[in-house]
Amino acid sequence: MLKPPHIPVLFVSFPFYSSFPKGVSNVFVLGNKLFTVTENNVLRSIIMSVLPPVRKDRIIGQLPKCFSKGAALNTEDEFHNKVKTACQQQRTGTVGFKISKVIVVGDLAVGKTCLINRFCKDVFDKNYKATIGVDFEMERFEVLGVPFSLQLWDTAGQERFKCIASTYYRGAQAVIIVFDLTDVASLEHTRQWLEDAMKENDPTSVLLFLVGTKKDLSSPAQYTLIEQDAIKLADQMKAEYWAVSALSGENVREFFFRVASLTFEANVLAELEKSGSRRIGEVVQINSNSNNLYATSKKKQPNCCQ
Ligand SMILES: Nc1nc2c(ncn2[C@@H]2O[C@H](COP(=O)(O)OP(=O)(O)O)[C@@H](O)[C@H]2O)c(=O)[nH]1
Ligand SMILES: [Mg+2]
Image 1 (cartoon, rainbow, N blue to C red):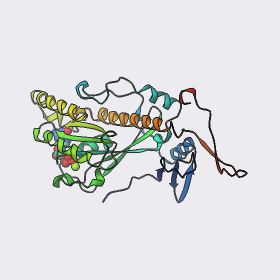
Image 2 (image 1 turned 60 degrees about the vertical axis):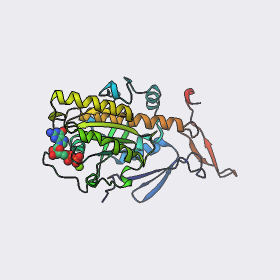
Image 3 (image 1 turned 90 degrees about the vertical axis):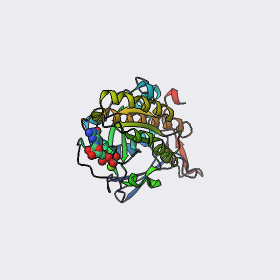
């Protein structure tokens, strides 16, 4: 059974609903009330007042570095300038309320559940039990001052039968394909996992990560050998390569911070592109003396987005 996220707010976005009054882009449910919102900052303050604050160790102020420049989604040292400016000017639209779906796939027992548990709960359980029932963890971050959430989906043991439900894959913004650094076959199988995940997603908008686990178990010689193949493969897949250990915790936090940062950046860039036609910050006024019921007034926009 899939569990719903433990969030008291259901947030719905209607960016393409043409008959919706201009400016009313968001509808959400809080308790048993339905709200329509015309101003994203209003929505943000309402949501922030019901959610607990983001943990201090989930605050991201700078773009985390890639693991290997040989297979990175981005080799920049900093967040995109447009993204930094949008965050400073609080022009990130709905990104601050979004929950991005991240799925984790790979062979049985490569270490998917341990990887998620190390990051989310800071624990490592060496007694292996195939995942049953528990499906996702919510992780809240603050990136450049903007709240941002990841929903990390773990398989519920379906990988044992190689028949993961299509709903598991659908709507992912990032796909983490995991293999075991001590098991070459698990690296070879990552191509198939990628193919399966991409059947349900748009390859142009999904961020891919290829992650080798159990780094603590591989000798330096064995590691060097498999890393060469993994980097080559990641490059072909257009994925970013990482090597981690859930047992020691090596690179686990760095990796998830990177996932959060790149997913956040992609969301803000997409939002800025969208806001060309639907400007962020438009406020709807109900004008009762006019035939035109929904007249919009614009907040003063900075020159850069005229
Ligand atoms: N030494 C070591 N063992 C690991 C690591 N990650 C997972 N394992 C072990 O690998 C087995 C499978 O891990 P699990 O996360 O349940 O695999 P999953 O089926 O992919 O979710 C368990 O016995 C874990 O203790 C790691 O980083 N280092
Ligand atoms: Mg598992």
